[in-house]
Picture 1 (cartoon, rainbow, N blue to C red):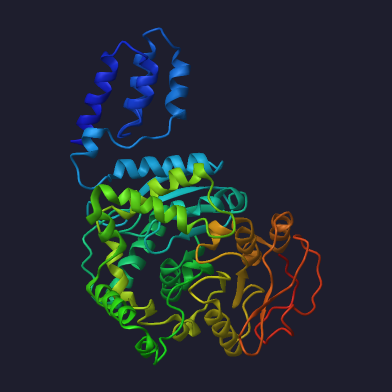
Picture 2: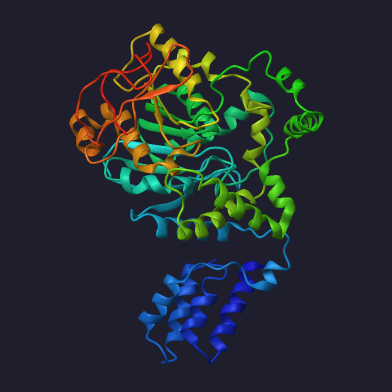
Length: 474
């Protein structure tokens, strides 16, 4: 119905005698269901003679993709479609990065919705880096990594099955094991279809948890594991719920309500879908607030595109989002925490955190200390935690330059020592973190932003047993 309505909209533009090229540029981007038809519309209207075909095409390509026509907006409750989501992702990548990235939907099963949305680019022949987003996020969140990492990797950013712009099959998994299999088996089918060899697998938040599960199950597929602010690392403290008993009554009731909604499977996507035409405004407010708290905030141009992309992937039909309660208990405590499972990991792993991340980095520091006691690191970046200052949970958006350098450093063995150092030479480097015996504060080595060697003590005292030797810099 939307496609037919859009074609009627183009036909109306073709019949118009006023400002034909401008009208074509407007109508060709209203619901970009067919780029070929849009281009044809521009070309046909340009033949009117008032403007050249090249000028008309430029007007269409430079126009910001608009929302759907007003009659479509006011006759549908949810302002979302696959076509609009793909258009806003394309616009985000076009405006915010220079590296050409090719989008594709890779089939991973027999069902209509069994496909994983992928954007690929970078340098052929370089080691493959597969980038997986977190919960309620999409591959477009990595736009600030593509330009910096493309010369050194064959890049593949994916949306997990049932999330982002991937297919949204009915989610029928019950329990943790079935839920993990829903994501892990589809990722392995994707890897086989894409012909990707042994890969560097990088996952954020819940995507980090799933990436770790994948590396545990299929270590032969993973060259190096990078966990960015991963969910599900620590075990739940025995007394965590009793801490809320001393709160005022109103807060205790709010806490109990949130616990109940979590157990019932209420998700952020369900809220946005229920709000209908008010959902885009909610997503816009969230993006403008959440991604401008610190570090390199979004520009007005970036935010204008990003919040529309974010709405499209959040308001899409529910599927993979329902996995949350099967993997994590209320409070985001994992049912099967990684600190009990990573002792079986046989591939190198590096953790990267923002200092202000609510997924507290000290849990990973303690875990890596125990992992090193179990066995020596497999490479210099194995069992290591990097913490980036002035950043939180979305460290790759808030401090992209420092984060990109951390990825290069983590992959020194994969890229080759000389190539990795050459790639990292011009990049600023994240601070080397040490921790005091009481784990009460972090200490940082200060530097000029490029490698200079050296060691020494951090500002917070002697390095703890879990710190790495080599100097690092802010």
